[in-house]
Structures are given as structure tokens and as C-alpha cells.
Amino acid sequence: MVQRITIIHVRKNTDSNVNDKLQWIGNSLGLFNPRDKNQSCFRIFIVLLKHAKQGQIISSDYIAESLGLSRGTVVHHLDFLRGNGLVIRDKGGYILRENSLEGVLNFIKRDVAATIDSMLDIAREIDSRMG
Image (cartoon, rainbow, N blue to C red; front, side):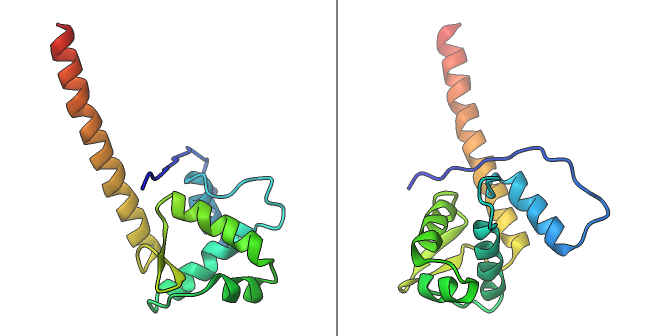
């Protein structure tokens, strides 16, 4: 499965509440689109984060009902989060890849580092062949 990880340097507001900090992390990961006027993806991410703490797998129907969103909207954002490697499908539901936000970020960090290491190996080979 191909995963797309986006890292965007977004200026951090130092005097912010938990929601602002979560929004900053999501924006830094390119997760939350300004066109999402209802902040649906952000709200879905929060629901997943809260349930991940208890290791609870939740359905798209549950998320849709909890947030007052259509199931189609929820599935659209869940597919996006899955494509970014943050959410996995398990036992007919969805759960964050890790059970904490710190765990999710550490997973991303390891994945990015492994990808960069592979790219460096290939770059060395290309440099060597090109003299």
C-alpha cells in the first residue's frame, strides 16, 4: 500500500488550547483542508484519537452518527486518513494506527526515516554510477 505523508512547516501559535494544538499538528501533516468548512476530517480524527486510547475499533456509521455527518463524508475522510497511513481498517471498523497521538507521530517519523534511508541508498548508487 502506498502511503502519502505530507509535512508542512506551519507557524505554531504558542498561546493555544488543546484544539488549536491538534489543529496545528493536523495542518503540519497536511490532513486538514481549508475547503473542509465543517472541519469534518479534524472532527473525525479527534473521535478516532479518543477511541484509540482504549483500543476501540469504531465503524463509519458510529462516527457519522456521533458527528452528525453523512456516512459518505466520513468514509471519504477515513479513506484519506488511511492513505496517509494514520488509520487502519480492522474487524469491520477503523482505528488509528497507534493508540496515542505521540505514537502516531513516532510511527510517521520512523516511516519517513526509513523512506529517506532507502532514497539515500539509491542516490549513492546513482552517484557512483554517474562518476
